[in-house]
Image 1 (cartoon, rainbow, N blue to C red):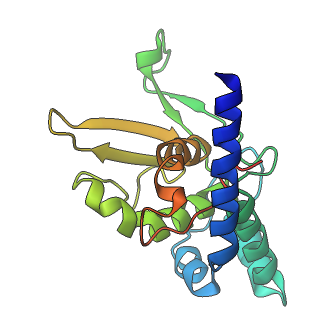
Image 2 (cartoon, rainbow, N blue to C red; image 1 turned 180 degrees about the vertical axis):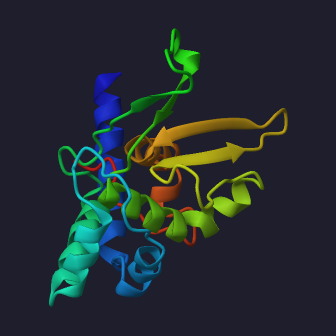
Length: 197
């Protein structure tokens, strides 16, 4: 029944609105961003955005620069939407042999967008305590694809593994949580404006 669905959606929207108004905003802080920036290595290839680590590092050193970077990342966190083009990807096929004849003869690499990579690391660091109870096979380590959230979920039958880009990961987590977590059923997870429109 479409009328019932719309009424239920309105009711859920009102519950989330009230909950969001009473939940303190917790933006990303400088002390969360600095350790991530400290691990950046120079001379890395840029993503589609063509922004280098060195450029972001330089911007962070000028007066007010780090605040602007934090403002952008916090805006993405608050509205739950990436600016256009931020999640555009690029895959480059490197040949494993002199003349590759099939896809197996190549190795794909994906140059990372530095802002997307930083956002992914901030979200993973903040969300890791909430993800730990899900299973012991979670995966986030140095050298792994940081723009991808790789998570192994253990079910009673068998473990399943999925990998998604950060935008897809946010969407998936949102869909999983919309009915339960964002209504306030999880004591440590504040409701977010996901899906509210």
